[in-house]
Length: 105
Image (cartoon, rainbow, N blue to C red; front, side):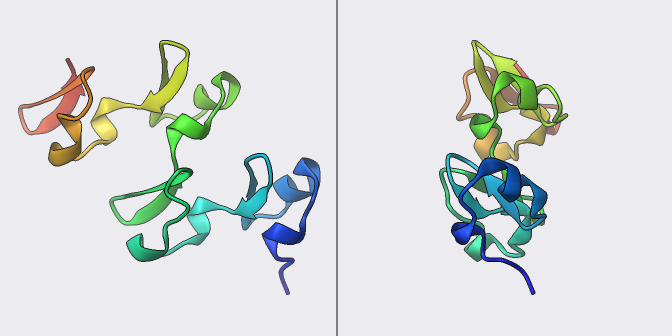
């Protein structure tokens, strides 16, 4: 029996619940969703490949450095170029599609 994330009121307790994450309030962790349709909220989660992930933009500098798919750019945590699909790659001025993959511009 799991405690609903939205009933947990402190960050420490939220962090101990595998299915939850703390983002100013306790909420279901992005990794607990198993389809693109349920991968929400959109301002915290994104669908990559076959899984729902927490967006790099939600991380602070201390957490950003611990996730290989993220990097600090101008004081903000952003997705590494290599994590992006072709249609997404061109939307970022720091990345470009070449030789079949998204790379730093």
